Image 1 (tube, rainbow, N blue to C red):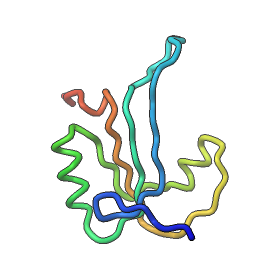
Image 2: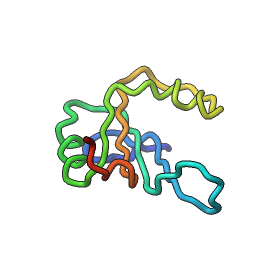
Image 3: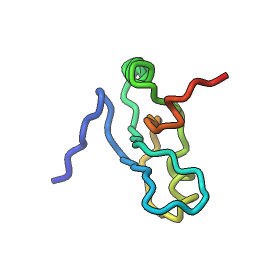
Image 4: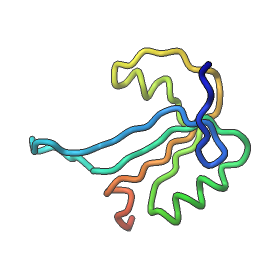
Length: 94
């Protein structure tokens, strides 16, 4: 039986990791991210993002995001949010 994995009161759907193994002149930003199926308020995700210098994006079109990287899957219609905690997310925005 598959059970949903909770993350800050929401359902964990996707885990990402970005790292560099070989420099090819591109813009790698080391760190990680998660996408959750939102259950209720995102206030706890917003607080975590602020405290951890992460970026929260609400109302993500996860199906399109996956198609953009050639992943085909069926997802339940739901509200999705992504939390990105990479080096670029910790940089001050001017």
